[in-house]
Image (cartoon, rainbow, N blue to C red; front, side, top):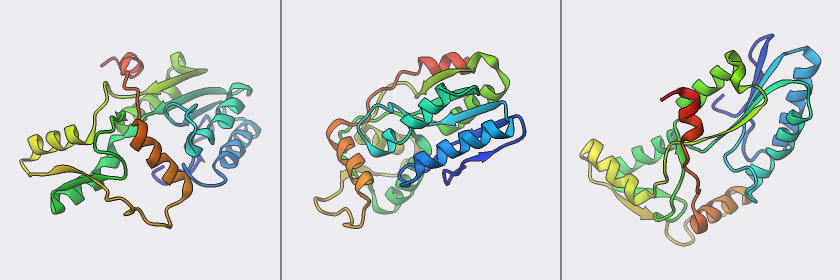
Length: 206
């Protein structure tokens, strides 16, 4: 769900998504896998993270969960979605009032996104279609885009003048969790590269 809770959907299937920076995220995921196996649930679909090999805490926390699924007797499907487009909603609402499209990394960083409605459709198919059984799938929309280009798209769609801006140096709160700070720093230096839509198009047929 939106808060990252893991829950069993029904007697035949379970869907797992863990909270990204919770200190016990890995333990929560492993516990759900164990509970799924004990209860006799047949299928588990795990929504993990795009490029789990990146040296970031929220990515590393998913690797033991994936390994546990690979070693299990479950009928599993692992989804690795890129950054959710829905995360832009609050940024856009703020930009409408301030005129500045601001995120905590460089406006020139090229990022990879996916619409979570497409991810949800793939998850639903994973419960119903054996083609996705025992598979691991990176899910992304095509291409990469920086915040300057995003601002141009927002202006073209809405007619509201906004420009891409960077967060002033030192403006991030000191209370920001270290894992989140490290992720923003990595995005600032490298962006979030990827953007092959081949897998998503192949699964959805569009």
